Image (cartoon, rainbow, N blue to C red):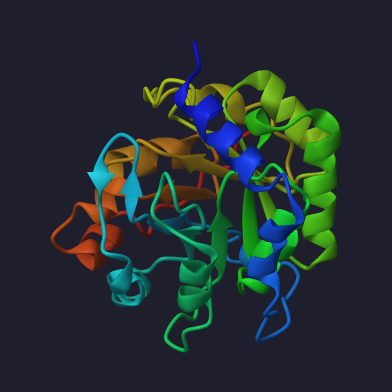
Length: 265
């Protein structure tokens, strides 16, 4: 039986099966990528928050009018976001490369931007680059070992930081072998969309020093942020709890200022 992830990845592969898919990247980038800019934003002594702009989701439906993406980005920055994640996928999440570009190139957006999509083709790295992003999210489960390594190394070659998202120990191992310098651990299983907040803690201990770590999904309040900080995470990627808040800036402030505990690796 096909899962949510299977459906999304199959659709993405079909969309990238021909040459026309790369045309969206043809305009080029307004300013050159600064290698390491996204990673540097996550490297402080306190938990960094990557705040997400996600117009819709398969499980929650419509979350945000894309026209409000830049005003929301301003609120995120006001609330202390270290970086902003913007969905580049249209059919399932209501984003687009153009939405990423709109946020990334806006003069009020002074923090790095992460291009978040389901990466299945090497050409998507150039699309992320040309959309103005500083980093790109790659889901380990969506691709094989060789393509995972190619995606990570191509991103690095374009001056983008690659955040490789994982959910299992095997995926963490594969991410490390790919050369990933930032590893995300998703608390939401993308096969079932169920949430397990203990997943980050279980897998974090086997990631060596020098690799940045991000806890993703299911983080609803400051106690959750304190919990992942106690396990040595560098950052949290937070979406729906901010998108559903009547005051995203205030909500985000409640997540910041949490010191990271030093843990043995």
